[in-house]
Length: 159
Image 1 (cartoon, rainbow, N blue to C red):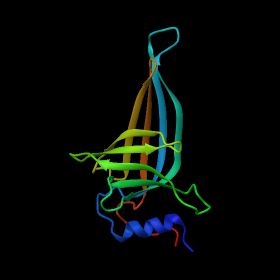
Image 2 (cartoon, rainbow, N blue to C red):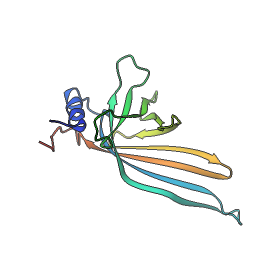
Image 3 (cartoon, rainbow, N blue to C red):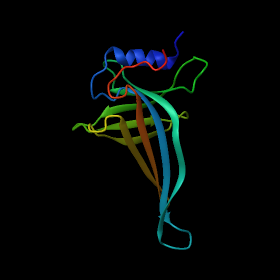
């Protein structure tokens, strides 16, 4: 018997391209609010949410001919095996070095992040999404740390 993570590992190892973002990641999130305080015009920034390694996801190539290059699938959160949600679509920027990341909430709402990809740090992806609500600026920062394959090695840690 193998689980979804093991199936994804086998799929990635089969035709992995060096410097590809395909892999399994641990996701962390920070949400900050910046704006003037109630009785003053002095801007203050405060952290609303900080969640470390709150999700495990797989970024996989999408079907050939699809309008997106990669999809993000939530894994580790569905133990009944009935399916795994596609939570985002990714497309690379024209000059490279980044991605447009369209996150899909369970209610259908979408948030578009700009992701930076640094070839010197291929195991880390960072994305930012900001919006203004009243006089406050809300900023979501996602950090993805690649857990598989690490340094392009395909060692199976669950043998």
